[in-house]
Amino acid sequence: MSYEFKLPDLGEGLTEGEIARWLVAEGQEIGEDDPLVEIQTDKTTVEIPSPAAGKVARILVAEGETVAVGTVLVVIGEDGAAPVPDEQPRANEAPEKEAAAASDVSPGLAPGHAAPGRVRATPLVRRLAQELGVDLETLDGSGSQGRVTEEDVRSAAGSPGLAPGHAPEGRREPLRGVRKLIAEHMKRAHAEVPPVTWVEECDFGAVDLKRIVPLTLKAVAEALQEVPELNARLEGDEIVYLERYDLGVAVQTDNGLVVPVIRDCDTRSVDELADEVARLAEAARTNKLKPEELRGSTFTVTSAGKLGGLLTTPIVNYPEVGILSIGRVGERPVVREGQVVARPTGTIAVTFDHRVVDGARAAEFGLAVIRRLESAGPQAPPGA
Image 1 (cartoon, helix red, strand yellow):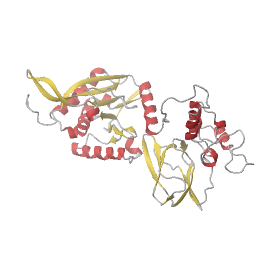
Image 2 (cartoon, rainbow, N blue to C red):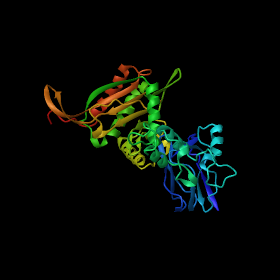
Image 3 (cartoon, rainbow, N blue to C red):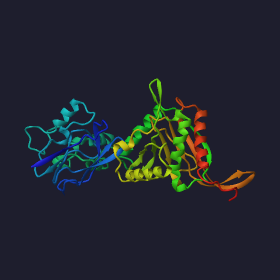
Image 4 (cartoon, one colour):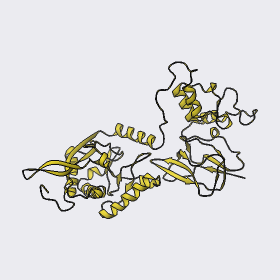
């Protein structure tokens, strides 16, 4: 008896998901609730446990493929009979393509043998072959049921039998998962938003640098109430001024940059913000973020710490209209009361959508944040 596991409805109106990584292999015995597969949705990766115990009979969708909710992903149990991947609906594919894929196996042929003139390969492998100039018809697939794999294509691309000019240059990886989503998001932000960046120095002498992010979140939430244009959206011919202060915090992970959302930054204490930042950052780095923890931010704060450089010009996290970046903080010479002294100094940069926010208002916002950071605690005297 077998169990067909289908891509579940992950909520939030999602209709498709990308197979980011399989956590099991065909033939492996697994238990109920054991880690099964990582699914890429929107901006995060969700780990899904196995709903049943047994042997992994067949994995039907390859890593990197995007499929619709309801698609059979894997068969668990001794009976491996289930639709092959090419017979299942692919997200955003026309019915004609599905029909063509379903005809990979002729009714008159024994299972595992491709019909004449047809090659068994996933859409990802077909795209790779086209990019590398490899004729799939010339390959003997090493995968299940004679399926052509990525390794088959890459091996053929580097073989001496190919015509000159077809050999690939450099190491290539498919653009997928978080990196693919980042690329799409950045492309849209660059196309939609006319950005301008305002920069000013900030004396961080009053700031506990271990708490710089929660302190900045608090300062930003308060400053946004003074300059509401930066806590807004442009929707068609209307500017929507938001009355909540849910701030995104950019977190670097091994899979790329993600932006979990800290809710109600205007009403939480700095200690509460610090705890929430730590919780969400850990969840981001371990792929434990929930989809709802990545949606609905009204403004974003980013800081790369020691790697931040003297100045960064961040890209607006569309559809927001502004983002604030904290530059690297270090001891630098500044003039205080006519004396040159060393102070822990960094930059505050605000990139804003010039369709919604005027430069003067962005400057007022940035200075309001700096004013709060510079008075976050007792200031040391000049030269101290």
